[in-house]
Length: 616
Image (tube, rainbow, N blue to C red; front, side, top):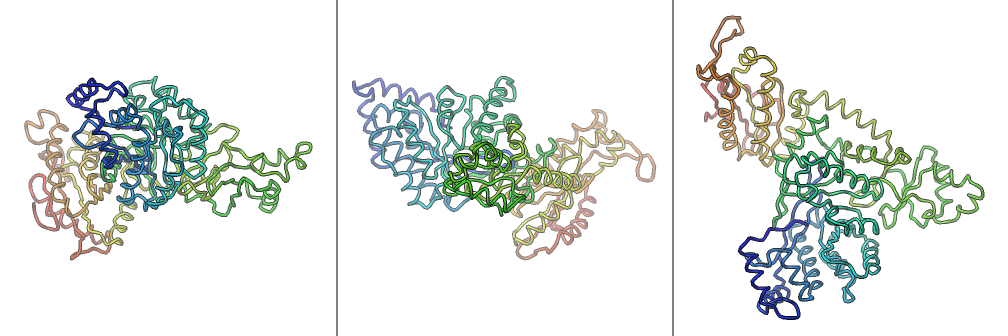
């Protein structure tokens, strides 16, 4: 669980306080009074840190992190909970943190969004005899959250004395519809013990294993083992904590981690922070570099969901499933649910294999399906993309490789799909992607650009199209060769991504050759274009030989095959704004205006940008 590091001065002060001990708790009277005041006045503040789908860069959840008053020693959560434990007020603090987390999430509108809320619960509190049963459910209902959108993240700060009561309490939470997450797997034996005794829907890999994982083969081997165990045995989503660099992100994604959390995606904040356009677009670039697809609505798994396969309750008699299979020969399997949440899977071949045994029909026909259903099955959310689901399907045990998989929406049964449908869709998308993306930079090509721009037009939003054209690139390409020329194009693409993807819109495409496009918000155009020109002009000398930089030009053949001197490369930007008083109706209209503006920009010596024919 993320936390803020306490400063040296604050920690020194805390130690000084604790050294003035009273015999019962080891806490000074002054500190005790301050803590009680926090509890009585509800002075707990909630920060929210995004949890991101590694395949798409989209936020799928927020973890609620509790802090005491700012600029006090209690701002540090470790210190806050240690004092609570010594004062035997851990449950009071734990419940206050839950209440504040749910209330603040409601204030920010999380209850209306299809994202999950992770709430930390101290495992020891669940076993207390005075534990207020039903309080969390009451809070969820009071603040109008869907039960299956709330994940209880179990943190084991202290040893659990009564494991039987603890497991009964967890089973009670799960029966109410809550998802359970186990925190800090890999930090000690506690996490492994917990996941072996319960069946968590989410498992968090400790940040110790994630830190510098790209440089440690040992850590990679450990995480890969944990991923395989959680996917194959538990069917749990895995969250990597503490991701701070793109290298760590790339490595954990390669190892099969589903979701990620860390400063790379966002720090804890009092608002619901989204992942920056820069980070999301770099994820897209990495997908292209690895032969992946740009995630789009078309590649969502819901597009191959079969919605006509009924789900049966776990109390349904097996005979009812036999009748359903006989009436629908094409049906391969039937999902089993409890309160709408997948609880099992019955594959037709497995069922009839059991019934064909001696006395099979007599033994099982009238029994509940829970006697024969498989409890190890794959579930994926409707929002997941085809590629990430394919990796999960292929990581299953060979005996289940061709089982159908269950698709859920907010944890509730939505539909099913098959390996055949998955492979067919993947093939279609790869062919389409290959035909649309630029093979050099992996950026979206003309068809994708057109779809995106016309979507902005239909939405009636203010936006600006920035067209990029490299001046004297052909001369550079002829003089230095196409390999060097390709490097220039790739460096330019990355620079455009780095600068323009911070926009509220932040879409970047490669039209072809040395022509690029960025779609941004109109208010950001001037600042971003000026910054790009500064950084591009600073990059250019590094692309030439030292003697050519000194001369300020290169000598090569022009279009008429005559020797000519060409200046060092510059860049011309044409910015076409579509806003309230001058909206465009198509990309063709925009590109026509841009073509005229680029001619004017190229007539100006050096790098320049024009905004709707106004020179800058």
